[in-house]
Length: 388
Image (cartoon, rainbow, N blue to C red; front, top):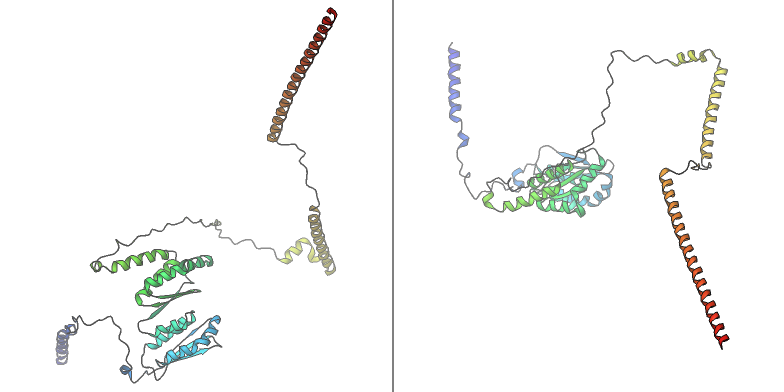
């Protein structure tokens, strides 16, 4: 009993002590309200902070495509020199097609190995070496967006990737200026380098473009508006949703997939197909000798050859067969047009004949009148001569 009482008393004592300690770390610090301290700055690493170095060796390796082999061979001394400053060793293996970085005894910064890992990743994704080395700085970060597995259709993927680039890379340049990041689209990945805020914007733009959620131009418009709103300190605590444009996606009707008709379920299995021996028994081949079987096969083969040769001959002769003439006559529409034409021609001929007759009659009348006038004049002349 005494031991139980002592244990309870000890537990109560510890609970009381814990209760007194609770919230002790929440006391106000003198640097909490100091306006001169900028808590967002990243201090540069000082080697004196870790004079002993690292206890274990850390290493990372990545593969690179074959077309990057020549370029990496040329620029590897530059990469090696940049990593040597931080005490990191690097190795280029051309047989396996890989790059490896690892820490050494001279390495002091424990985070530099992750930066070196990002460096070899960027080099494998076709980022130029002078640009990729900048990732070793504390202010610079990188992100590699994998876009190859987002969409299956190859043609759509290529079109949407071109949409991200824009005509003469104008869309990509605009995104780089607004986000403050370096962007490189290569194959199935998009490599970006910049601040965390810019990388987050770049990833969102790239994924929305490849998934066909929003066009990059609309993202550029939003970023331009946000940049102008950020200049106004009065809007720092307000929501910017009323200023940003809202783009509604218009869904295009797609073709309905062809649904196959489901067969009616039957619990019974399908009937068993006859075997080769059963078929031979039905046809009577099973009881034939080998000589007769071979003769039958040979005859079937000859029949097939003759059929094929006849078909080929028919196709060759079809080119020399003259086309059939249309002896059935013209269609009703053609006949009606021909009848109308014939009627018009007969009318015109009748008119011409009538005119010709009238003109002949007029000429005859003129001739008769001329002859009559001449005869009268001659008779008058004779009378005058006789009177004299």
